[in-house]
Length: 355
Image 1 (cartoon, rainbow, N blue to C red):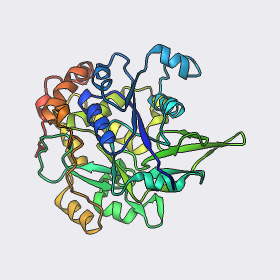
Image 2: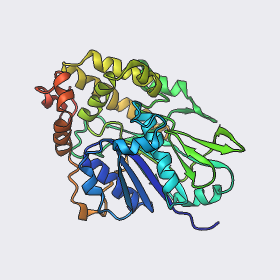
Image 3: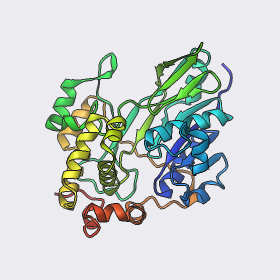
C-alpha cells in the first residue's frame, strides 16, 4: 500500500470561530486540504481562512451557483447546496481521498485513517465514518464549546442501520421518539471517497458511476476513526437551529430532515416565545441523567475523554467560550431571535442547566 493523503470539504454558515477551529483541527490531524464553501458569500470568515495554509475557501456567490447548479441559480435546499459543493471540491482537489463534513463535525482518529483508505483503493468501496454525538453530563455547566461526553448510535448487534430497541427504550424511554438510533442528530455518519475513481458525494453516503450506471456505493465501516458531532455548540445554538428549520417550506423540510428531527422542530416551535420552556426542552434532551450515564457506561457506550480542537494552535488565539460564541450568534441571528420572541430572554440560555 502506498502513501495516501486526504482532505475535507464542508459548506458552512456558522460563527467564524467554529469554522476556524474545524479547519485548524483537520489540518493538524493530517488533512492535506480543507475546502470551505461559505454559504453566505459575504461571510467575513473568508478573511480569517484565506491565510491558513491548506485551506481552500470559496464564496458561494450567484456566479458560483450559475456554474454549479443545473438551474443556474442558488438551490433552495441546503442539502443540495452541500452536495454540489462537495462534488465541486472532489473535481478540483489534489488529495487522494475526500471526506464530506459539516462545521460542527470533527474527525477523531485512533490510528491514521489513511491506512484504511490505502487498503480500500481499487475495491470500489467508500469509507464510512461512524458518528459519536456530544452529550452533556449531569449538573455540568460548560464554559467552553467542546465540553461534555460522546455516545455512539445505539445499533442492533450485527446491523449498523438497525436500532437496539431494548437499549434505546431503557436509556431514553418516552423521549426515544426524538432520536434516531439514540441520537438527536444524524446516526448515519459521514463518508470518504477516493478521488478520480468514479465516486460522487452526498451528505451521508456516496455513489459510484460505472458503465453509465449510478449506484449507491458499498461502504466499509471504519474501525480506526469516527466523527464527533456537536449538534448545537451551545444551548442557544441548538434552539436557534430548530427554530430556523421551523421557518422552512414544509415540502423542503420533509425532504431534508428526518422524522425524529421534525419532532424536535415541532415541539421547539410550539414553545417559541417562551424561553424557559425552550431551555427546559433543550436540557431534557441533551443532558443525561445519572441513570442514563450509568447505563451507557456499563454498556461501553459513553466516552468522556476531553476534546479540544485548538490543541497546539495557540497561534490562532481562538475564543472558544460559550459566552463569546453566543454573543456572535446573537448578532448574526438578531432577526430570528426577534421573530421568535427571544431577544429579551437570552439569559435563559447561559451555559448551566436549568432546574
